[in-house]
Length: 367
Ligand SMILES: [Zn+2]
Image (cartoon, rainbow, N blue to C red; front, side, top):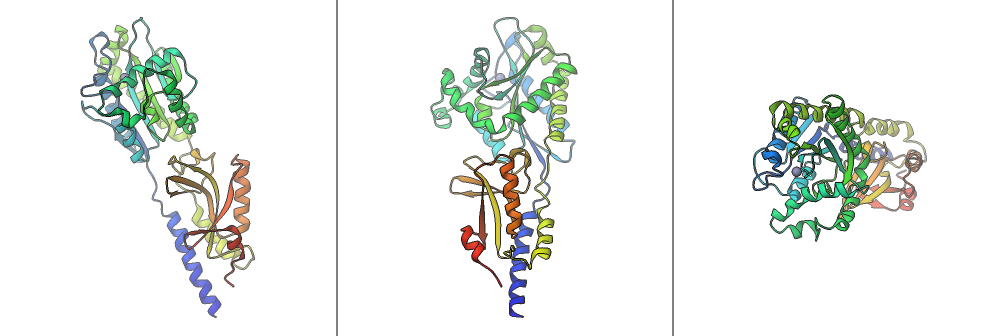
């Protein structure tokens, strides 16, 4: 009888834990919209048009359209003609734990070139692209104490860009996916000249920890394109193309809220309670990664695995797959993680919220 009571008690605690895991309200898909420049930084002034105003108008149009979707939350880095530094823009996106970051700009060049291009932060760089990034990055000179925020980064030095481009690699695939949808829409729906999806070291993209793109909607210096981008029609059409690309992206990245973990584990509790593999007061997980970067616990960040949980220990985020008291189940989940390519994953054990060694966990029995 006493054993039964004890068992009931630990089961209850266990169910509370499971409950805590599954009580993630349905998360919205969060999009941060970033209108380039603003305030004392006008951006480029090709053909007499103002990049900062055109970028803002396009951004506000995108936001208005996305806000019609109940499962999407839109956050703006600026909604008016104000100066926001690049560091702050990234901070806004990270604080919101956003799913996407989209920065909108207009291009300029001293030769008569035109067309649209969308950038992701990456290492496949070229000199031409470096010049675009250099120009967009130079805004940091207008920022007070920029050295503090960008750790000695110098926009005039291509080498200092290489170091910063490595940071967004986790999101390269998703960023390229969105960038290609945007370019496809510009090209196929609007018949704009396609200059392609490109990689470069934009500081504003470096500051974020989610898939991020920077859209150069066209060249203000090319008068005909400048007139189009400066028109209401042009701004609305560009916005619609970007909005449609976001919706397509959202459908395609397997946006799921965190798992049906609870149900599985309750079943496990009932079915496996009597077997040797069940440790009612222990939670096993598979540690798959540790990083200084905070990632959303979405399947697209973890090679398609769901049931991901995240814990912050000191300055490190640890990422786990699965959560169960069934040792056989966690061993299977570890095999799954190995198959997905998490070669150095391993099983960890928690008792009353504290990590214990696997050996201790396996020795413990509540019978
Ligand atoms: Zn710009």
